[in-house]
Image (cartoon, rainbow, N blue to C red):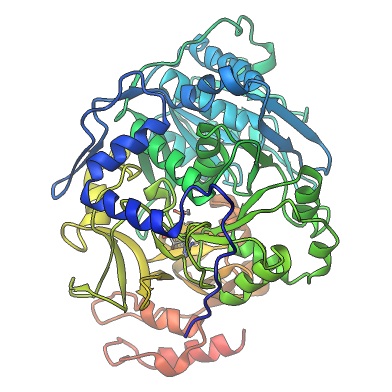
Length: 640
Ligand code: WTA
């Protein structure tokens, strides 16, 4: 029986008690149109929607609020000016402790207008795709909001991605504009963003103009044909009205890894995304005016989009943006910042919690954390041990923890407990958010009732659902709606217990979750085989104490290549430059061959088991072309 921890007494005036949850959830299912028409009123609409839900999973066509007109930048910035112009919208801290900058809503408005005017001056307009490549600085949020303001579609590329990966993402959506900065700092190290953009553009792209924000003042190459120093652009201060956007006009593209092929451009549209971001933020974090909200995610990931930028700002919240890393200058950095800024709500990833837990309680306890009211986690399953440490040591058994399950595809939180409503079970995300209908399905597509384990599907659409894969609607239908007809398949395995709580067990497809970062095994494999000495590669995940999953690469070499330590190092470096340091294999296992069926299919199940050190449960190996290979692979694993 799993541990059940009663939720600490709700604050007075909590946005949702247990009884309210029951009532609201039932209403969201029985009368979705009525429910979401009401929730949509959290936003300012230029024309309020009258048509609410209109979707089909077969064929796949998803629309929400389709006759509504709004602008998300207006909702995040302009509409707060009458009441809270002088409240802090963004509180930023740089890589060096104490390097702090604040932007009030008034200042944020002025900055966003300037950036929007800069985009217009260069010829950008509604519907253009604009690639953003930034460290965690306010200009990243400003650029996102500026795109939303003029109706351009932003595609934020994580600043840790390589020029190669950036190039692929620019080309896929045919961006004509890039906004970046000279460089960023992470843990005392310079990240040469502008140089990476230059390298990406050198490979050929449709980019016509690059806006370069000066952040560090580091030396950069400047190409007068394309580059524009942002601070040297003139005439940017005039008014720039918010474009009227139909609810179904695209808001952004965000590339994410799937089980096959190159990363796909997840497309979100304006109205449904805005409603999902605003509504989930309101209920899950039980936010009150004046509180400081800190989500430690990077804006290069969906968590940064929804819970660093849009969700908080749409609610008029103060959002803390942090440029650095949890262990610089030392492993008390998070708690030092919590103490100095008096953070009310703290939202981070299990991998960070596990890494900090390893440093012991000291770095946490030496800082005052009494300002924290609520803790949250996101991005991967949290093991009960890490959950309990977070609860006992960070939150002093005083702060509720929300373990929020969701995906890039869902826009925002889908399964969680609510802090004023639900008991918590360490390791379980909890219960469905309003409008969410999880189903567990077995391999034959049978829907399982009651306590059960299966593949997690969602039976109904929700406003924040992705609308398509940019430029490839067929891939969208194929990826998410073909495994189980009439349902959205999440790619996750899951258990539901006797209380209806959901326990996510991790991906059941070929997607890895490494330190909360999503990576396709196929991407890492194709990076490896692009090295001239590699003949074939098969990549699987294996349990890793800190990262949740580590990357295990089986590699066969071309004749004449030596499987030595130098080559191992070279291959690691190769993957870093092809994709990103986050994709670096933890273990490279050279093997003369990969286990294949007689028809030539790589038997990943066996490779996974061997990487997991589960030699006893390899299952049937009789269909292998060369069964003796398995013993050699096991031997190789034992030696690592
Ligand atoms: C995993 C991140 C367990 C899951 C928001 C999902 C989680 C993938 C949780 C999406 C959680 C996310 N518990 N697993 N609370 N949150 N995941 O697109 O496997 O980067 O499918 O979105 O992360 O990763 P993505």
